[in-house]
Length: 304
Image (cartoon, rainbow, N blue to C red; front, top):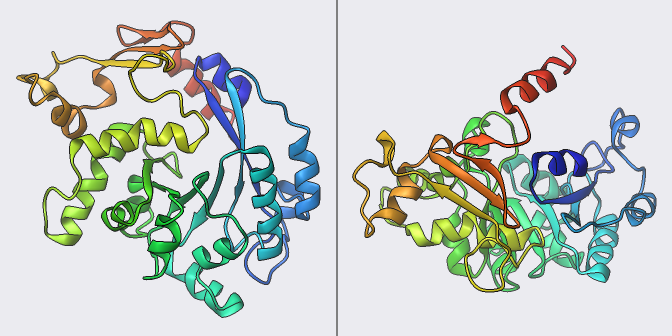
């Protein structure tokens, strides 16, 4: 993954994920041969051998309370805290996860992770779609991040995450994806507002400024790159330019530019991508890769 990011010319944070069980009360079964380390100590030994690089930082993840028991989750959380690394976990993605967790541990997934010492400003809850009332304070008071994945949740019929309530509680919103059905950061960004409009019947729950921060600076901070995602002296020169000459953004004015970008732009409008002051994409074309050919080659090698 690090080498792939390097070839693509982007930064990466490798979040090595602890995955020990096939579900609460179940062993790893077939996962044992594929991606389970067996226990948290063996996971820690393996991850401890990884080395960061100037363009690649490290973090860790508790896959979920379904896949990592509370004692092991505490070990992973302590491992991350000792190194000041980002820590992520899937949290309350589906109602069944909450029900199983309450039955087994008497607490919600957020409650289990809080007791394991996982919840802090370095923690990011992924999804957080089906939270209980007390979970908002558990995630908001320590200033946890919450990574909403709107197109994934839409695709899987998992529901609409309570992004407004989380932000109001003190959580830092960011955007992500948990599938390859659609890779479009513009759509993920506006979907936070648009999906909540459908559920709430209200417009304007999130401003364009809030949404853009979630897609940039707050997302970068959540994966351990706090010095990028914004334009200011001292920040890394990671920049994207968007053309205003396409049909989607025609007529954009300086006053409406931010809202137009968030609510109308698409990846096709991106003109240049600069990473660390170096052009990676110029005039819509990657300078080092034939992207379509590389994707065709990679997909062609997939089994089945």
